[in-house]
Length: 549
Image (cartoon, rainbow, N blue to C red; front, side):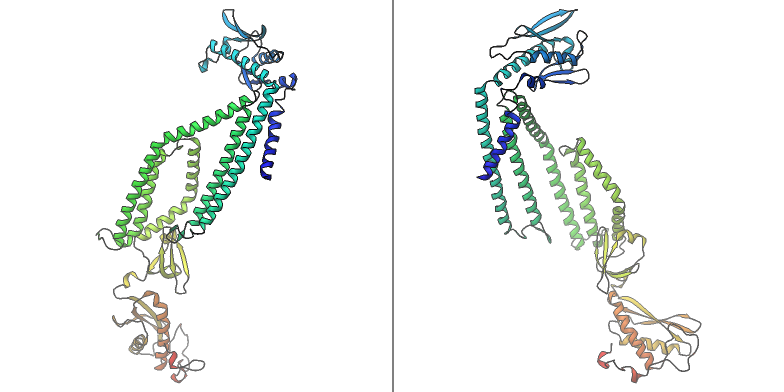
């Protein structure tokens, strides 16, 4: 109840400030005269009294400029005595220097003259229409002035305005309480909607609720503004002085509603076409997606199209379909031909142009990686200093997981400028080839070195027995020979673990046969062989046979 009283008091105060005080019958003639305004635009001036346009002068008459003519006409009109009787306004035609003019008189007193040059010929107005409009405007103003100073009319209008204010206040309070109830009900309803709207793993519920709350807030503010607008329009229409303002407000509202309705009717065919384009694009995208998924899963086999590139091709084709649909539908969007819409389009185009250089490079890099078949998800690769299993190949970047379980994101643009080593592609049939190198002095028979390396390989788990490991003598250096043990493993990502175990077995085997490993190199023969006796292989804190391998 207190809020209702507060709103009523505020509205009444506004009414007193903007309506009752200016319209008081005690207003002096000087106050009325001060409201007569003069407007000059391109040698055009208008007489305005009590918010009404009486007449517009567009030419100089008898050596008097339009602005001075307005001043003289305003003074004469304001000097008309306040008479509660009838006013008699006439326009007397006179021919002067072969040109027609009309003298506007009130109760026999001359007010102003209207000449043919004052007629708005560009707007299709005739002299007779201009004369009748001037007479009508003066008559309406005089009648409004006479009505304005009638106390019974003022009291009646003030009472109606007060009732309208109370009704508007109750309507405002009702709307506010109604939307409070709606938002509270929506909040209670939202508690049972958690996780209801899901797209994949993405929960849309919080965003939908936030959007719904925002729309209700906008609707509430729009309703309150409409109530205030209608209240103000109605109250202003009750008093002759402010009645022109009411007509302007109602005219603006009606014109706005007309434009909205007209725009909606005009846009119906375009919107229908946009909906048709949307559904056609959606159906086409679904068909294309189903086809490429079938190719990707090898349900459909095409000789010139491989499953490895089906996923990327599906994404690219889907984007092209929607972009083409947007280009076709763009001219049909309501308002697309307006300057504001075109300005927004230019702004968005500029943003895309400035920020798309790197983006295009990333996209092209991803496309090149896919269609050159450099690698695919699950392959063990090496790019620059990074080595690991490909976990994701996206449109902008590729992700690999290293042996230390680190996820490395590599931009697609880097794929075009870096060498990509794929350890998986050629290893699917017989396994991946891995090698390690040792350097042994020339005093050790090379046949013995071969057998010891093969023996170490035989003791290592995950080294395939078929095809068998083999030895390559890579170089005969100044102080030693280089031997490379080549072998195959099933999974390339196990290469570090296998090499670690193999290196341990190589050391054990060479120590067992008393052969010194000369890595990395030496410049002088030591006095004795640098080997570890077998009885010291498990010296403290080594634990023994159970930790071998």
